[in-house]
Length: 516
Ligand code: MN
Image 1 (cartoon, helix red, strand yellow):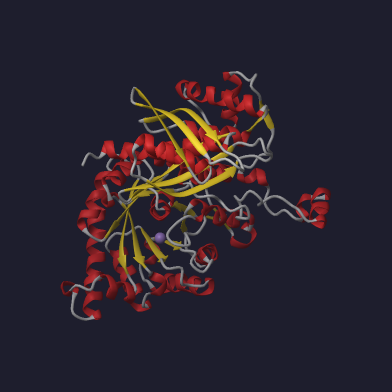
Image 2: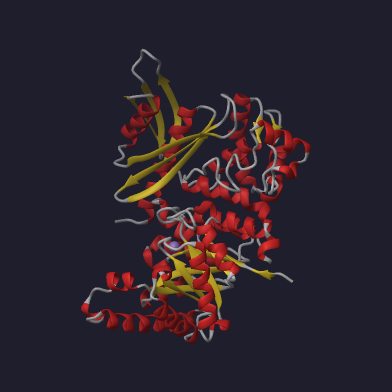
């Protein structure tokens, strides 16, 4: 029998933390629900002590999501751990993830204050004591405690072994050996895991977990090297998002273990047919586009183009295909619906795509669907998902787009007129700009009087052809808070306006929930 590898998803913690964008708790809940459908073993939902919003998100996910263990992160300080304990109080299977810097670089750099000791040796003794105290305190709140030895990839080996042994003695059930800086190479990281398993006397009492970063492009390779050497939990994020160059991409790790089960001899509990949908949701919610050549979930991951490859593939697909698109949940694009499709047909198709909508959500999305179907004639599955992600779970709308008019051309100064409904009043404004998108954003800024800055603007076509739906994602920033706004339409100017207004609504929602 092959052994099971636990899959620990940290998209909502390590991933979101790096995106530079704060998700609302409802968006996080939507992603967590999808991760539960994907059947990961652990969802790291956030870092409760970092902000009241993060605390609320973890609390909400702990209460609502069944299936995976729900985990929260803390530093090795009592306040952090207590916040985890409180946020996870309603979880069926809570896990507290606590830990501390393990490398000399981290210890000397982060614990400079004299109270941690005068010499590096004294500081290391203090840090070891803090690690022990943290695990013991965490065990008062949860039976399942994961300990991380931060920057283990660059740590002094003897000290790391001592720290891991002490953490397990203090009650850690999982020990995480992060390559926080993405410094190691596969053979070396594998060897580190092997050494740990050979030399930490109580190691059999805990699961060894691997957490790798992609600074040198080796996060997935290092993760797999860890598994080969006895790690039984892998940590990573969907699409590999995360600090700097990102974390190990979970979809790649999972598909490597599955496709090469002959070599690794292990399995995961992940329902791989949910991978593509999960990737799409995370990309949409965070506004981080997946490169077309990205392994497993990229748009071109399954397309063959050179003559020799296409010829071979058509004769026998296994000549050039080691993964089957249907195994990761990619179905062939088909024309599925037209403007004559009724509500029932729409909800039926959405259910087949894996989305079960409430009547209210269906009522919300149907008029948008009709508008798109009218303009486009043929609606593809991807279009439906774009409409859905654009339309469901919006924050309360302070600003609503009523009307938009653009005058633009090669010899005209781009001019935009917009009318917004703000609460119950209608307000109009106009602006000129460098181009029609710039003009429309300036007109919206004038009408709303916003001080938010538009920091990033991205557009992509949902399907092919000039009549394709365009999907726009923007990042807007106000007083240090960044959010992603999204909009979809067959008209890219309208999609841009919707995305910008969506971002402003999210900022307004944060202002309302946190009165200053
Ligand atoms: Mn990390």
